[in-house]
Length: 188
Image 1 (cartoon, rainbow, N blue to C red):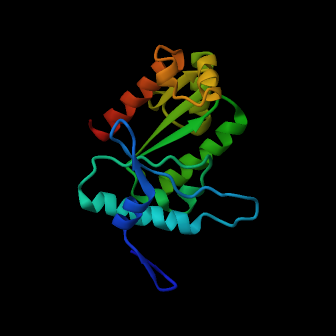
Image 2 (image 1 turned 90 degrees about the horizontal axis):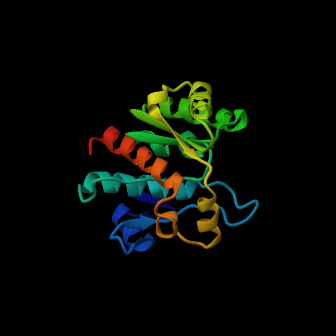
């Protein structure tokens, strides 16, 4: 529970008030986006998400919780990921992107996250994955490349899911490989 200025919030309340169920039966919660410049930090949102994740884990009602955070290491630096079993590091095959990925990997290691998988977007050859994995200091067996695919851009412009618009896209096939790696890591 969160007690701040006399307000008590439980994980169950957060889940009930801030979640929706998709047409596929997946419960999603969207929290913690900065609305304008100078809005401050995401500390209170991260605190609420920590409470929610504790509730989800302790309740035993859910098999898995996936946290999709904004790019960068903030959620790791704030300790939100301290109970994560797996961390997906999204990168691109460039030195600049790899710099951020190195920091994300280090913070994940500092928190004791058991496993990391590197997903390298916008690849055009296998050496792109090798380059990114080498820069981040990860074994190539824990990395997957997702090639640049114009269908991703087209689906995004239409405001639709890639799988709904282009179920046979090259990027989607590679993302399925990443999904398989996640399932193997968590024992599914």
